[in-house]
Each structure stands twice: as structure tokens, then as C-alpha cells.
Length: 199
Image (cartoon, rainbow, N blue to C red; front, side, top):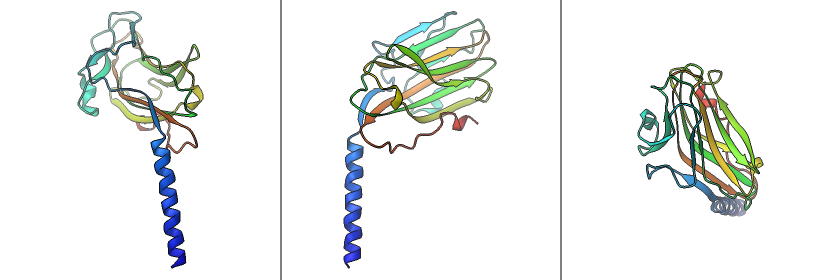
């Protein structure tokens, strides 16, 4: 009986601690593009060619929750084209652990490349690169991923996607459901390499 009571008490303590930890998580930045327009304070820039990022419907929607996404469609653009989309700024200095979640879609053709970047302390730093070396050609490389970005914490952070078609028609890229959350304490999130589902 004493052993059973001890086990039950231990379970209550563990569950209480877990609940406290989960409640301590704070959403610092979120964007679902559900308004179907470029959010205020975002940067949308075409560096060559005339194709900017758009918000709305594209084939990548079959892998999301059915709402608008941010996408760049390069299926009809054969000229050199680079597209840059950068989020508004957020302050992450109130936490010690920072987690990024995002739906990412990349229909890769030819020599297209894309980079997920973070801007912090005035620097642009690459989180992941995507190219023919790690993406399947002519297929929708899609993933909802979780990535620990704690080492980039600063008071002025932005997220960005850089796309380059390599001078050829090169498919499309889309992002959706971005959430950056944080807390203080031990990292209990099961982070994983971003490209696992691309192989």
C-alpha cells in the first residue's frame, strides 16, 4: 500500500512539473498567412526577373491545412530569378530556449536552390540549404519540422527564405504555419534534422 501511494505521489509530481513546463512556453512569433496577403513589416523582394513571393493558392496547398500559404511559383519563369521573403522582427531575449516550427514545401527542378535563414544581431545566418544534393527532383519535398534555434536568440530576430532558380524553370517553393515559441529550462522538444523526410 505504501509503495502504491508513493508511486501515485511521484506520478502527480511529474505530471505537475510537465504541465508547468508546457504552460511556461510562450509564442513569440506566429504567421499562418490566413489573411491571404503579405503581412505588414515583411520584406518581399525579387532580385532579378519579375516574380515576387505571393500569398494565396498553389499546388502546395494539398499538403497544408487548406488555407493560404506564402509561395513563389517559378514554373513559367525561365530567366534568372531570385526571391527573398523576410518576416517582421521579434524579440526572443525573454527565453533561453527557442523553437521554430514551419511547414516547408519545395518542388525542385533543375538547379534551383533555397535557404532558410535567420537574421540576428544584424547578421544573416543560414539554418538550412536546399538543392539537388538533398532534395528529390520533380517531387514535392514537404515537411512540417521542428528546429531548435536557441543559439540565435537576440532582441531583433527575423526569419527569411531565399530562393534562386539557377536560370531555369525550377518548380516552386512555399511556406506556411510558422510558429516560434520559447521558454526557460531544459529543452524537452524532440528536435530533428530538417531534411529527414526529403530522402
